[in-house]
Length: 381
Image (tube, rainbow, N blue to C red; front, side, top):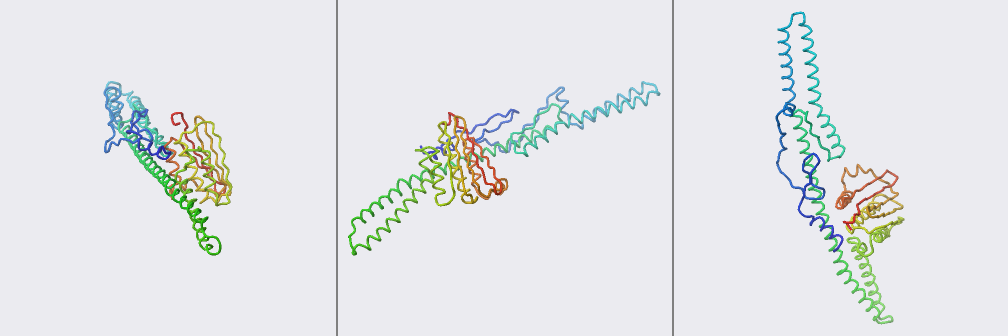
């Protein structure tokens, strides 16, 4: 099976979508699977249990009204049964008790707002796994805000998982088509051009000698050069579309050929270093190859680099690819926010297919480093 078709098989044949359970009890789809969408389903209502918990769930306004009413009624009846000389003390004690109780009720009822603020801050920082923890002392209305926020975050993650699933299918289908096109170029077009080149060589050898055949030999030689150049371009295109060296020679050799073919028409110096201590998953190898291809093309087109280094490190647990250049560098955040191209997006999405991560560090005038990490588990191999 072709490597690129393997990516399509992973994306298309991933099986039915599944969901995982979050620690707070909310359902959440696992990354890389197609989520089930509960369209229009409102958040689950907060259960109103009886007893002390039910009292704690009473809205803050009702708590304050009832507490103040009870304290004032008790103070009223105490004052009626007490002598007039204690009236001021009773009123002052009632005021202090009311103030203290109101303070405690407001503090504990509004304390869950701190959890809402912390959760919102974590989400704003990019942690979409953050959730509001339930509180037994929370006001019912404030608790509903937390439940609604959790439901919104669950829907956001479900939508994100769905987008990633569809992206994986699109990438897999594109890679499968590239593999098919590469086979057609290699097995059909290149073979036909090779046959034409051989026929021209034979015809050129049989051409009449002397001045009579000079013109014919010149035309045949020109035709042979054109066919030879076309054959070379077709083979280069076939390799770029789908590298056969990746299957037959391994990732390290394929990276060396990629750097050579990509930079052979330039004055850029390249160095490829490989430290491979374990077999690498074919799928991971394909993803890292595509990341290296995109990184080299970006360095060639935009960086103005004089030198590029490619480093591959593979062990039993991790596969790491690092591509460095000494070019002009760029603002990574601005580039990803502008989304003027699909290169960075495609690199990240390809790594998502293998649960990998992409790290890009660049300073203006100091070059760029692209690092791709992916797990290299025994199951993947």
